[in-house]
Length: 112
Image (cartoon, rainbow, N blue to C red):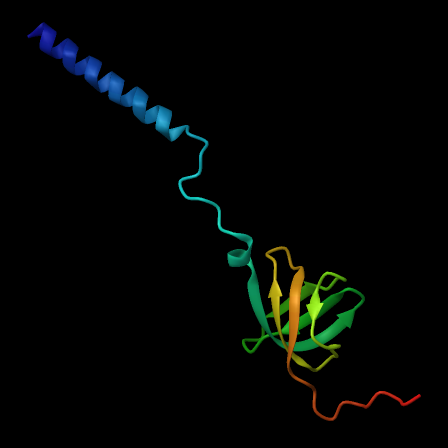
């Protein structure tokens, strides 16, 4: 009977050590997502442009601040009031901005 108890305790101790080893494993349980899947899409009206930053208000009223750099792909110049779609990194950098609807009644640029 003592041998059976010792065998059971040894087995439980071995299983416990193995479980602790797996719990401390630094490898992630799933592979990291590719960068393209971590980008966000922001759609809305451009409320403000201050230097490199655009503030966009979506249809729910949420305002998002985007950083626009020389690396940002833009199909046209964007103005306050335009409706845009932006692909944005989680830290707020705009990868691309596409004009959806241009502000109606916008002042025309002066001719030279």
